[in-house]
Image (tube, rainbow, N blue to C red):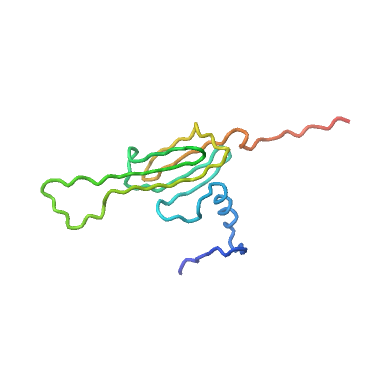
Amino acid sequence: MLPTIITHAPGRRSHIGFDLDRFFDDVFETPRRSAGVPADLFETEERYGVELELPGYVESDIDVTVDRGVLTVTANRETESEEDGKTYHVRERRASRLTRSFKLPASVRADEVNASLADGILSVSLPKAPEAQPRQIEVGRTKK
């Protein structure tokens, strides 16, 4: 069975994920599908999160910055030098430089952003400011 392909047609809301997709497009101001580095964007009550696929990169290859409300991830891998005695007939692994940028919501605490790399997935945690987090409001009795 072939997978169903869902395309976006302006004015047509045919699948349940449309509004959630549009929400993240608006919040992070990023195209829904982007060529290059695949990324997942998510939100919890305490933080936003970005996960990017960076297989073959190590921590020292990756630069993560937050500047003026924009998160930028740059990964730079150099080509390994040729060893004596090796003659390459095909060399598909070469130097590469990848960059992804995301405009962040104003509620992100930029000074507390952190990132980690595990199994080729870069995880960036973007804590929300306390005023952006949901809070429970106690309902009191009205005085008569």
